[in-house]
Amino acid sequence: GPPPRPPPPLPQHPTPGQGAWLQSEVAKGVAEIARDSAVFGCLSGRERDCAFQHVKIRSFSRGTVVMSRGRSSGRVLLVRSGTIEVRVNGSVISTRTRGDVVGEVCAFAAAAQHAPPQGFPSNQRPDASPRSETITSQVCVSDAVAAEAVSAYEVSISNLTPFFKSNPQLVRALEGLSVRTINQAAKAGSRSASILLDEVSGSVINVGSGVCGITVRPWTR
Image (cartoon, rainbow, N blue to C red; front, top):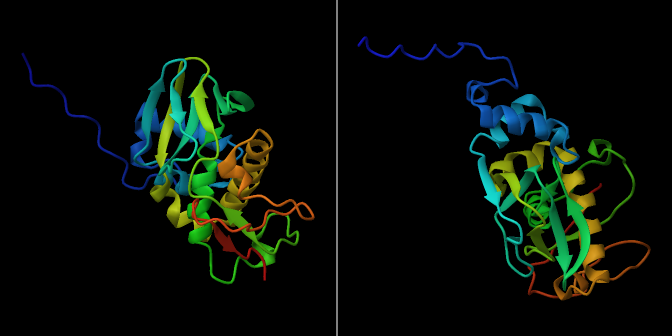
């Protein structure tokens, strides 16, 4: 028979946010979910192209431990379908569904390490509220378990690194989610979360443990 027809040529000047790799169904899907995500929605189309260029689809059966408390993770998961339960000592402290992120504490730890030494200018922060320091842990403070069949996009934290300096909104979103997770986990009895917390005026401060690789960074100047 005749030889197979070659694929159509890639566009010479793709529209920002619609790069050539977005021709794949996987990339189109992750771009759509990321656009509506509370964490990744602040990224521009071009930034999403870069951040999710090497994304992988992961599937987890019910009961699978997706991330384990006390262990470091170099990835974040963006839930595509299904429900992931965030647990501490068997108790469910929160759930993550389509568009939600799992692994935010480790991602925020990496973000803090790449923050400008003097912190972000206050006029670059979404709320411009005063906050002198933020604390992070390089390990998961809770377990993440698939409550049903789950499909998720796996994103390497290293792919997000360029945006930790250029997009303070992304860092702020990770900060807010991480602080909520750490507080919830500590209340449920997570030791790795409890050693991070000392509730003074609603702040999260260093209580002195090198086990979790605590990092402190100023966020305003």
